[in-house]
Length: 194
Image (cartoon, rainbow, N blue to C red; front, side, top):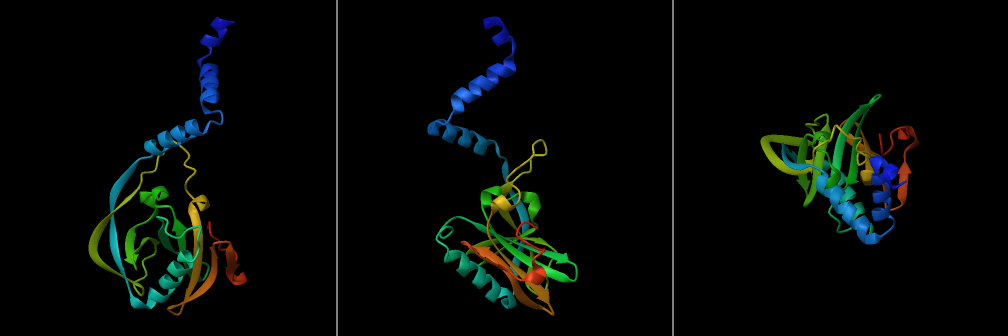
């Protein structure tokens, strides 16, 4: 029986893994450290944008509502702003995210408002932003095409805000932060993960 056990290396690896991982907190922490270390990151270059004053109120509201939430207050989050055209509306979405889980391929630009860091993706809105032909470095994850990465998506969203752009004016159409949420029924098809 001893010989057949050694002949099957897959079984040996599974037994070793189960023995070493079986609910022991110190082992789980060391496994987490190993997983964290193998994630590849780089300081990639992105366009540096400047916000125009007509967007200040929206960004101030987002930052204030995030800071009012004890679950996210004083944590090292970044805001991911994205622009998307859905049907006849331009939607501006802002997600509160863990910067360690941001992929370099998920955004094109970076801007800062009141010491808060925002990443920018989607259609460039010249009514709200200025590009001064400058670059900035931002540490982000390199996608691993060899594995299915589970960190992409809604599990990296700790809050979100949605605005519809019509006639150069922004209307809040939804939010979800600190257990409080609301979505304008007209825009209910467009939720956090979309």
